[in-house]
Length: 204
Image (tube, rainbow, N blue to C red):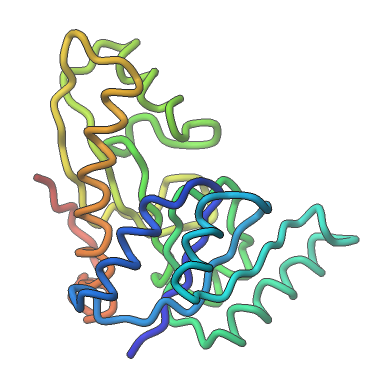
């Protein structure tokens, strides 16, 4: 059984979808731990309810960035991490971690990348931008994590319509529903080795 570690910064609804998929057998993996960058978030509560180890850590907790990187890698090794899933994680992953887990770190983004990706585009900021620009569709994308924000190869996308009366909140809810379905499916493909080296975008 492969070990997945989830990184989260917020309420953890995508984290919950991964937990549920693992418990039902749709995702053949063990959730080995949760890395959070701050205390008091919903994702931590979810982890504790399910007996999942939690590590709260951030670069600002250390004297220098190298010490933070070393600590994070040590935690991942202790949990015997095979794959990392970012689920609403609002910190950049250190380059040393990306190099240690090549093509084994994935992120879910609430837009159809490469649209509305990059630093500063997260959460409702993305949905507000979609509505502001008058797009007729949006969705979510899952991609490999590289050293640049949201620029890694896209593995899969799901599309949703944008309606004339949408707000950021209503659009977010529609996109999130697709995220919860898509993320466990892609993680299952990843651990089964079913994602080709030359990733071709799958979209629906």
